[in-house]
Structures are given as structure tokens and as C-alpha cells.
Amino acid sequence: MFDPYRVKTDFPILQTKMNGKPLVFLDSAASSQKPFQVMDALYKYYREEHANIHRGVYYLSQKATEMYEQTRIRLSEFLNAKCAKSIIFTRGATESINLVAQTWGRANIQRGDVIVLSESEHHSNLVPWQMLAQEKGAILKYISITNDFKFNLSNLEEIIDYKTKLVAVSQMSNVTGTIYNVKPIINKAHEVGALVLLDGAQGVCHVPTNVQELDVDFYAFSAHKMLGPTGFGVLYGKEEILEKIPPWMGGGDMIREVTLEYTTYADLPARLEAGTPPIAEGIAFKEAIDYITNIGLEDIHKHELNLVRYATEQLSQMEGITLYGTEDWNERGGVISFNIEGVHPHDVGSILDEEGIAIRVGHHCCQPLMRKWNIAGTCRASFYLYNTYEDSDALIQGIKKVKEIFGRVLKR
Image 1: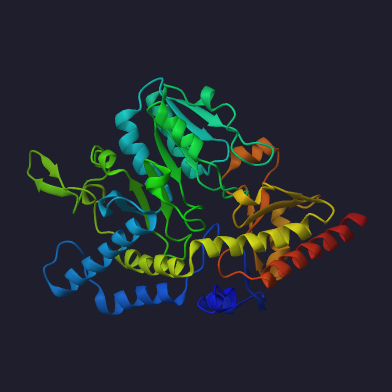
Image 2: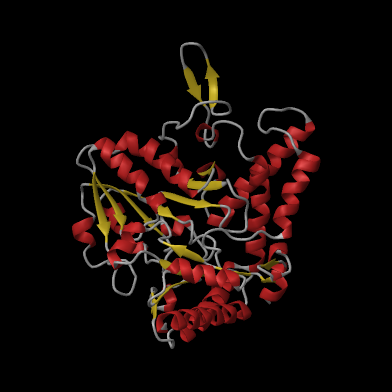
């Protein structure tokens, strides 16, 4: 049985204090904490196993290569990809998306072509396409967000047409926690011959993801949001598409032969992975995947949802609280986004910090969405497998203290 209290003991930082009080960490949507198993793998590699990979014939290099490539195989299983060659390692979701924009995008997007995004995209899945559209003279169209914080699927025929070459949307909102219904979008895009990139930075760590069942052409995410190290990410792509992508960066390991006149390139995945990679991070990421898999994403998602519902029910009974999130619990993840009337999000975050509660405040790299709602930002509490009902209670008590403090201030 999944026991969050036992799980919590695997995370040493959660045994510490912040401002003299027990740490209540509710910012996993920005970056999750790491269990002993991941940190031990990093330490063991540097202490006993370090060598560069893919080139050496000696034992340490061969062993490091094998461990690093085991992560690729493990990820292909985790995503149900057809083969490990379709897993490209990057520095994170941002680099994965930029890789597609600067390789496939530059080679295939022409003047007048349409790129479809949504109003709720993280800047990492917005700015690269704006840059490409400006360079190529392409047109950007946007799927709107409904009053219930879902994708508006009512006008897909107008937005996705035969001028559309790419659709790039998020699997789950980092602001509202909505798990989007992306299948109709994917189906419509493929109907008109467009490719689909799914930003899985939030989704992959919370709900099971089957890239073949989704039929996405590209899927991007980061290790650090799913218990893994920072500086490591993944781009999944259909093999037949990746084979046609030109290299993005030149250097070691991505070549087959180099002369003074020309270069021929290596096969996948090496062709898209120039230079020495973050080896330790890649090896440790496998431990994170194994940790999540051993617990089960279904149980993790159910647990997060229970915590969110518990906290949301209490917040909805408070005066002056605005909540940003769908009421459809079948399409909801472990995020609560809210504002307190008359209190700036940064003030909320500062007071909660004094209570040892870590949340995220601001625009969450989604400024267009904030402008749509005519707000500067929100307060965001995000839950993960190591959070408990006591963490939710602490958040509610902290918010009550914020209201009490600002109630006194406003009366003066």
C-alpha cells in the first residue's frame, strides 16, 4: 500500500526546518525534491564509477556507458515508446522544445504556415515558436481556455486547418493543474497532416503516459520535476521523424566521419546528442523512474488529488479566495492556484515562508494567461507523492494567518 508518511522518510530535505519550523514543501510543480536513492546514485557514480561514455574501451567507461544507456531503455519502457532510439537526451524540457523548433521547425516551417499553441502555454512552449514564426514568417494561432480552465475544443475546425504544420500544447497546466483532453487535438492535427508536440513537463510525473496510444510526434519533459536531477531532460520523437531531423549542434559523439571537407553524422540517438552529456544525472534519473514506477503513477495521482480536494474544499469556504482550477476532478492534477482579495501573491508567499511553507507565487512563466485573467499572478501550491494531509492543514492555517494579518492592516 502507498504510504506517503513512509515515502517522506526517503527525502532528507523534508526532515529539515525552514525559519525554525518543519518544512512544508508545496512547490513540486517548479521542481520536486529528491529521494536518497537518486542522491546515492549520483554520489556512487562520482565516487566509484566516473568515466566518459561511448568512447572508452576500458572497464570504467564501458560500465558508465552501460548504466547511462540503461536509463534510455528504461525511459522507452516508461513511455511505451517503440524503441530506445526514439529517446533523445537533453538538458530539460526547454531544450527539448527548442531542439524541435530549431531543427524540424527550421527545415519544415515556411512563410504562411500555421503553428497552433494554447493560451495557457508555459513560456518554454511559447517563446521558441514565436522566435521561429518571426524568422520564417509563420502564423501563430491559439486554442483558448474555457471558464472552467480547460481547452476550448468547440472551434478546432477553425484553428487547425490544412495550413497548420505543427500543434504544440501542454499535457497539464502548471498554473491550474488541469490535465487537458489532448486526444481530439492530436487527432485533428493528424487529420490535416500536422505534427504534434506535447509538453509533458507537468504531466509525465503525475499520470501514466503512453506515447504510442497518444500518437504524439514529439514529447518533451525534464527529470527534475519527477524526483530526478536538474540539468537533464528528454525528447521523445517518432523514429521516422527523428531520422529526418538535421543535427542541431556539432561536436563529439554525433559524427560518423569528419574530414576537412565534410562530415557525416552518426545514427540516432547520437546524432542529436553532441558533446559529453550530464552522465551522473542520466544514471541517477533511472533511480527516479524506478522509484515512481515502484509506487505507481495511478496511486500517486489519486493521492495528490485527495490532497487537492481536501484543501480546495476548505479554501472554497473562505471569504475573499479566488480559485483557478477546473471543478472536473477527472481532469485535475496536484495543483491549487489561488488569490486572496486585497493581498499581493508575493505577500502571501512571504508570510507562508515565515511559517515554513514553501509555495510558488507570480506569473508561473505564463504571462499571457495572467493577462487574460487581468491579474499579476497567483499563489500556487503543488502537491506530490511525499505530501500529507498535515501539509494541506498547514497551508490552510497559513492562509488564515495571512487573512488575519491583512485584516488588521486594512482596519488601521
